[in-house]
Length: 419
Image (cartoon, rainbow, N blue to C red):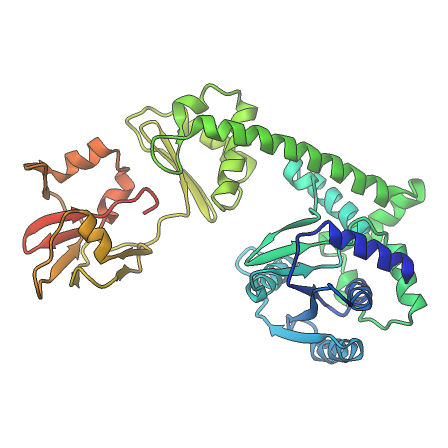
């Protein structure tokens, strides 16, 4: 116990501070050992310790697992929260991927500011992850496997046992007489990770006994390379910023070599919180979007994200949702007006900043461009379409900009580059 306790205590020092530590507790050997060792460390200065069990409902014994986890936590004096989720896979999604997706979504939603989520991923898990990513043709981001910690929701997610071997965890469990759940689905070799764990890794270890340690070290080298690529991308991003917030300059991007272009695009998308496109989709950005004429508006889309171009500006965003440009709203010009289809809220402060004065009891109409609108700008009446062109408003946003009318007269146009 002392050895694992010391390792865990040292690992926690390398994680961000936390007001609460929450162990993701499946009831299996790994998470039981982590919870047991963390409970033994409680004392002066140790954060509050809790556990969360995610009930997927996929196994006939799932309810019995909840009872087991509850008993373990009661014996350790640790508060347990059970979260029930629907792990039904989406179209084209594997049951394994669906379970992981909903599990982490539930854990993320449970975190409060200052919380640290601990999972029991260990050295063997890291080695398996590296091989899986290699077989999928991943680059440095995938081959870096699992980081020691990363932000998650309002808190962070840490893996304090990444450098601990599976044998050490098994020894701790035996020495302390721990009882754990054996999930029979973990041996189902229809799933990639299980096939690797049950059939391929044992064969490789026969030839290379230090396989887990070696592959985990290789993942560390990739993580170091990824950090250097990140440093380079951050430098490039500052030089490539477009005239509009959040955009990149196409002309500046074209001055970089293709590998460097791909690198900076990946980090730009990561900075925006967008899912990463496939290698083929990313290459389409270089081949089709950057090479397109300045008077075109090319688009490359993938699930959860898209990149568009207008003139010299490259835009990345969540795919545009449905929007009816024929809808309109009545507004008093003072209270907040939410437009759900756009995720936009108009405020009285914004309207006042546009130089629009309010008469008592006055009501405005908020609508969208249908064509032919004009706006008074500096004592001149200007065509709205030409104004949008001059201001660089991308074509795909022009019928999504809220227009504020006083009677039949357009008095203000709401535009922010993130609309």
